[in-house]
Image 1 (cartoon, helix red, strand yellow):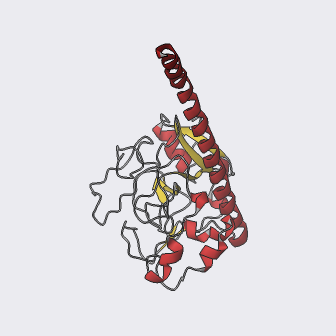
Image 2: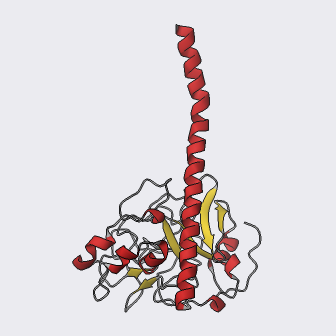
Image 3: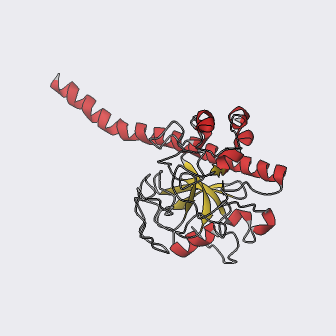
Length: 267
């Protein structure tokens, strides 16, 4: 009997990693599909409006991570293009996204905005748009493709859409997918391996900030590593690619900048 139990325990020990790897592969495949769908929605929005959606909409900048302001995110704008028009139609654009009139639509779970590998749910999002090529406030002069009151045309992406990050993995922690703050916009100013909290990995790859979480901070934070080996990003040509956690800082910045004129190289 003891021998049988030992054999069973050994078999479990051998099989468990394989089962876990299979499950993670399935979650990663689902995540890739979600990024593809969001990327297609951005492209369809561009076809409909001739520009990409604004990363966030607000009368003034820079954007602070506070639940006040107009702050409609790009994720709100593309809802009709991810087949969630009903939620989009329930927003009252005459008031800000945090207004009680918008509580119901803004707190809906949008499945395509969630990566199965992230331990979040509800109105959170696993993805964010790229607003800049280093740590800096979300503002009108950013060098990404989704930022404050942006209206980027395809011809504005002079580095080429296939060489430019549009979206990537980054779990929201505060206000959710409707909020045009660091919940839905990130930069490449810090390492990919810092976990889900945007303040958890502000090891500098560019500009430092002395802002602390819990204040009216303009700190944004970087994308996060969710899957083994790196982070999945959606590029402007619709492809989804893994950027290694050890990516060269200069290459990472070039991928985030739409018009720096530099070669990206291998990543």
